[in-house]
Length: 182
Image 1 (tube, rainbow, N blue to C red):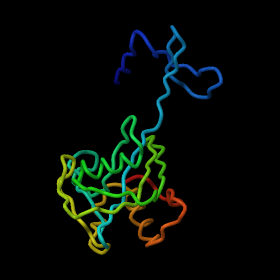
Image 2 (spheres, one colour):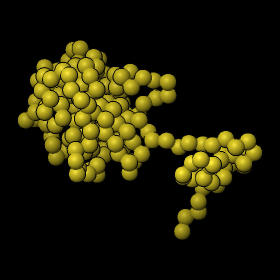
Image 3 (tube, rainbow, N blue to C red):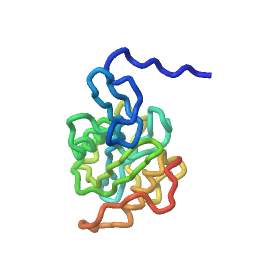
Image 4 (cartoon, one colour):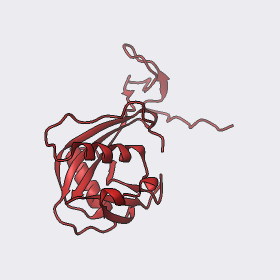
């Protein structure tokens, strides 16, 4: 049996449902400050170079060794588009131009919201960043589908292909009935 983590001696440390709320939160009994633990924002992009898509083989858990889009957590004080550009640089030294928002995926079991953009490489000078074992530009028929890290990568690649060259569209969401489990 594991011991629950010790709560701090000051600040938000009492679990209660604040007045006007409907769920447990950590509240400071001294000043009433409420700590809201909210979902994590993930940003990334389906990055294209001509008819190929950029994929990165993960060098970090989870799903170490599997292929993914350049994506990661949005940083504080960072715009989502800037975060997607930063992630492409960190994972593949890729310079990209954001074209449009492709999709907003909701992953409640992980408390994540994912914003996935459509982007274009400004040149094909890519190489693995610290979080990638390898990077590559794949034609559709070359994509290693059985080695894709996350369901949202599948969804984004298929949503991008479905749209083709369409420039004006409603951003996509989780496919109906699809599981977010790898």
